[in-house]
Image (spheres, rainbow, N blue to C red):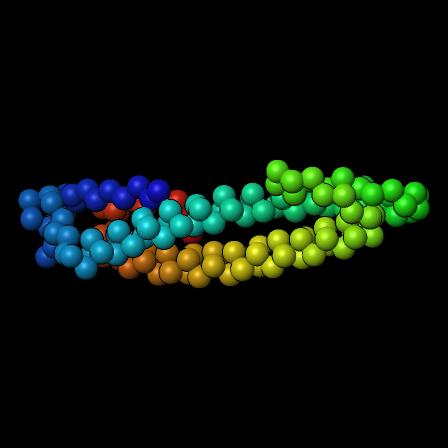
Length: 143
């Protein structure tokens, strides 16, 4: 979550009354939006990490399935999907894993696009808020 703090400045300005900054509703809305976007960004980062780990697991499983195909044992492979164990031939398992990996890669691309849009919007908000409040505001995290 973004940590947002506004402190009074020692210099006098139009927005400064005895060391306290006047914060308009529009300013507060922008601060709140920045915090909300920052939380979304953290969620996306977590989801990317989860999907990346999931992709690595499928890559490992695919490697094992390819070994079975090369050995041409014709044995069924035990594929665990969630709580269910499925018996498939090596080629079927390989195809299923490849499809699953492609789906995860597409999800990662979509997450990267969402992240890019959020970072762009946060950068604009950050620029506006720092222009408005200068060193009197502290926005943690984000771009």
